[in-house]
Length: 128
Image (cartoon, rainbow, N blue to C red; front, side, top):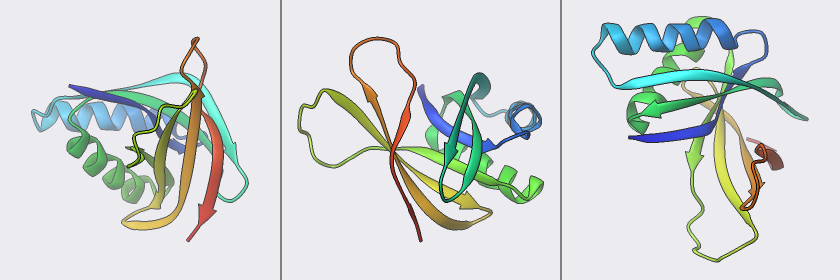
């Protein structure tokens, strides 16, 4: 099972969206569990997001987060995109798409130190 902490939903929708994701996964017999972990980020271009972690299948997580965006009419961050280059760096990088429904409205680059127990921070963001 994979997991990711670079998924997010618009601020003030975190609790209802994670609850809905878990209910949908359970009712459809899918292996996915989503949890808020008390971390929020603020972007210049897209607003504020509550980040959540999940465990399960990445395809299921991506499909359900897009459904949640449509259902609640909110922007979401769909993370878990890795860089192609395999260069050792002092930081780990992760890439995410900012979506509203099916439409991708931007991209975010996250970075975190390889050492210690720190939170993901926005390195760069871009509107489409």
